[in-house]
Image (cartoon, rainbow over all chains, first blue to last red; front, side, top):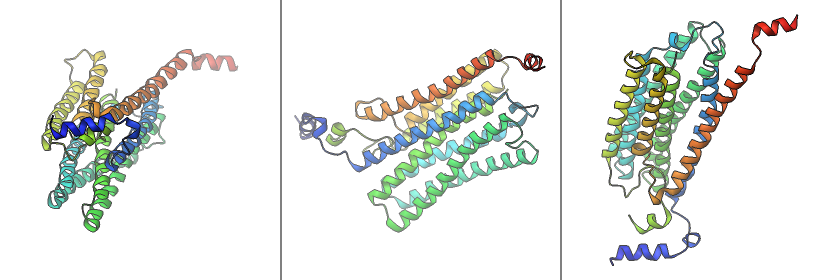
Length: 206
Length: 124
């Protein structure tokens, strides 16, 4: 039996309750994972409100008349690409490679900003045309759901700036790496929520 | 897998000991782009029987969420990830209850509600 197998056997012989606390990285990651799942449940409430109210247009425009699929396709691709560059950036953070980190996280920031610009442009045009959240129950639930997602993306961008400053001032110490790691989880989770928004709100519009 | 992970499990996301590197993100990107294009095709095409389109869209979205969870968040059902996976299952369960429960209740209320015309008649 090799030394590694011996070590595993010794560890698993001890009962789970007596193995001591898990490493900080596992605890932080798992705790943040629970937060993300509770955030998804928040979105589930907004999704169900949208699903119930999407037909209540009160004589106003319906989703099919308002949404431009080409525009939404650009938003989707921005977010998807930013998820991948965020993953590359996280790998650079783990290797304490600051050049790679600034490059990939910078690209992630720009793609996120692109997404937000496209979204605020869409919202602005709708409000200017008189199709704001007060027009109908359908539009109220639309702005609540898509707006909450957009707000999460804005928070993510602010968080990313804070993380870049922390790397600059504190360096790649374990605490900073853990925070960056939680940021990456947050960013990937937002992309998963966007898949739901895209399918239910934009592609499912009748 | 080192003894620490074997004994205490691991958190969600990439692990420092992970050897996937960029490969898993690139595989995920390829799947996700394919599924997104398929969703846009399904929403605009007339080749699919129209009442079946929402079901097709839902299937593609669930597949894409699965791709994101597997290749970006690196969640799996491996024994060292039991905690993460259980939490995910619970989250999916509550999300399903909230969304489908609300839709079912509201559809039922709608069905049982007196129509507006009749309501006006009754108020006379």
